Image (cartoon, rainbow, N blue to C red; front, side, top):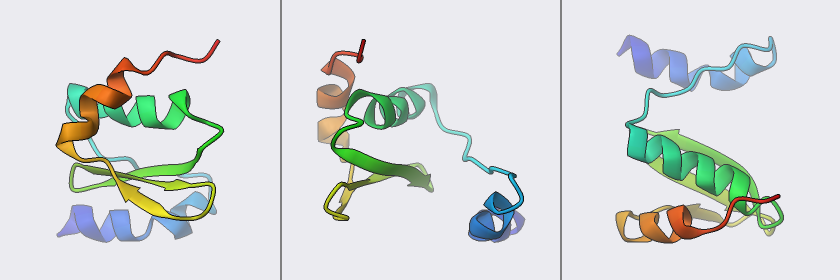
Length: 80
């Protein structure tokens, strides 16, 4: 319960330059970073809640990264 309470206060903490992130598995972290860094022209924000990775595109549409899509994100080339 404490963990969830702290995560819910993320916006307040961010205003004080304190960033709280979930402890993701190595695979989820790699996918999270792939979504965040590989398609910067199409992805505006990336976050995770309870191990589920979501992102908002440039049209402000929220997408959930499904397990079936993990390999797609991992296979995308890193930007130069």
